[in-house]
Amino acid sequence: MTSARRQPVLGILGGGQLARMMAVAAAPLGVKTLVVDSAPDACAGQVAPLIAADWTDYEALERFAAQVDVVTFDFENVPAETAHRLAERVDVFPAPRALAVAQDRLAEKTLFRECGLNTPAFMAVDTRDDLDRALASVGAPAILKTRRLGYDGKGQFRIRALADADAAWMALGAQAVAHGLILEAFVPFERELSVVAARSRDGDFRTWPLTHNWHTDGVLSLSLAPAPNIEQLQARATGLARTLAEHLDYVGVFALELFVKDGELLGNEMAPRVHNSGHWTIEGAVTSQFENHVRAVLGLPLGDTSARGCSAMFNWIGELPDPAPVLTTPDGHWHDYGKQPRQGRKVGHATVCAMDMAALKLRAHGIAQALQRESQVQPLLELT
Ligand code: AMP
Image 1: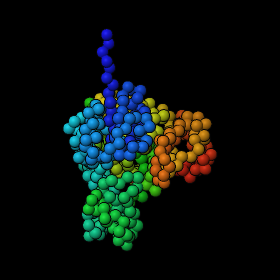
Image 2: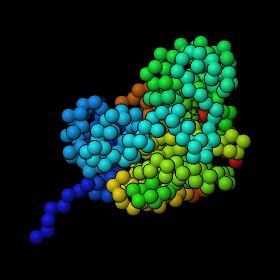
Image 3: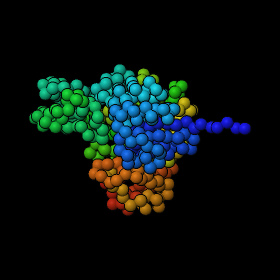
Image 4: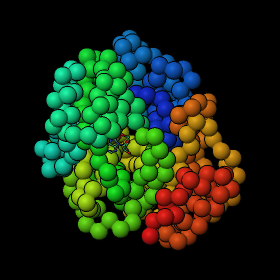
């Protein structure tokens, strides 16, 4: 008689599109998922069971912990207390310490420098006087950001000249007490890259090829991978990502967002989770970031992170366009997150792949033309 088989269950804190794509990647591995989100209609709930509970509903979190083998995150701003309490009951990856560093822009940039990754000049700002001191040191233009809970350009104020200091304080000063602020020099970068990396429980470390990213109003709009013309930057980015991962004893997938200025890398931020700039890996790489994250946190071997050819990813913000031009393009792939349209909300993405850049540009341009979104693809077409 065969004994009953128990499938592993992955618990995910946060039920957005990242949890949804993780749950989809977990299924062929025989891994079940259970999601926690405060919103009962969170979009991951369409593909996995969901417990609707707040981060401080410890009774619900106890029930959740009792049902899962490992806990991971779709959302990095889960309160540290919640992550610590869960870590007492069940394995949590990435560990709460890594999460804490990535939650605080000041701690994160300090760690980057310790690990040999240069950053834009920065200074902590807790008071209005601090802001004057920081501006005197960092100079203008600069960006005032909340240290915690900012994402996609939210919680940021661009200071073009010293005279903007009052306006910046009006916009963000109230958050100085709760979240702390940081002033960063504005970097007139040549381009933005990200390296998405995976580290397993036993220390195996891999990166996908560097991705070239373009943002609109602080939100990712378009990604191209592998980033062309990167020469020695891939080896440097991989080495820095490995140093950071080993320093944090990191387990799972993370992304390191980088600026290129004068051909050198500067660290912008680290996302302690699967990342929007890695969505192209679903169709464009041998193993996707979602699958490798599931493998890493469950203690399974990592898969090959090579690109299959080249890929472009378009983010759909606010509302979805017509899927037909993507669905009728060779190697075009549509992702509808099942969310209600809302201004500024990431509601889906599309990836188009090809064997070379010339073919990729033609396909991406064809899609953008049909959708009357040529400006979104323009930076890719302009690359030589
Ligand atoms: P963040 O939320 O910090 O990743 O910022 C979102 C986007 O704003 C980045 O991807 C950049 O395009 C831009 N940005 C943020 N910080 C800086 C900076 N110090 N200099 C120039 N651009 C920046």
